[in-house]
Amino acid sequence: MQTHSQVLNRIVRANCTFCKIIAGSLPSHRIYEDSYSITILSIDPLSDGHALVIPKNHTPKFWQMEDKDEYINLMLNARKVAKALNKTFHPEHILELAEGLDINHVHIHIIPAQKSYSELANEHKSTDLDHAKLAELAKQITKNL
Image (tube, rainbow, N blue to C red; front, side, top):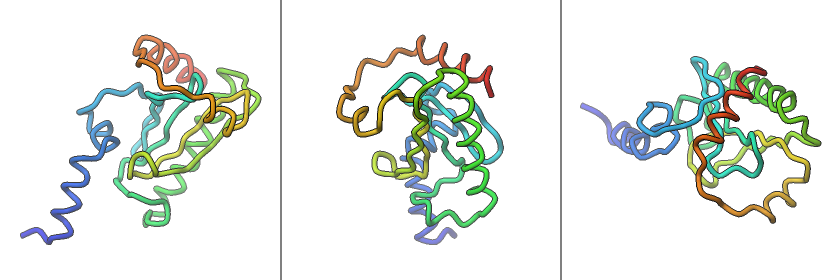
């Protein structure tokens, strides 16, 4: 019999957007994947190439990540993706933001930018999702990994 905690964890994972993407039940534009994490393009990007590096194991907060290898892999993959974005877009900056405010699952935003984060965030307006553009960007970035 499952404990109360196990049942709650299963419910949380079933409702987590990133867990659904990892499981393949929600679409995404994947750039990179290994046994520990996936990298996808953001569907609400601050700039072209805005990527998210997401551990496959559902963990709400960074400080709750227990597996040292998983944590190290996440950071190494963030660096790998940042290098590919730099090679693809030649931006002034590569912004790396670790946050969990929008989705309660550890993830790192990797954003190629010509401006600071505050400037990008202040100017950002959500637009209609362009899957064809995201698919093309994913191909370009993947070539540079």
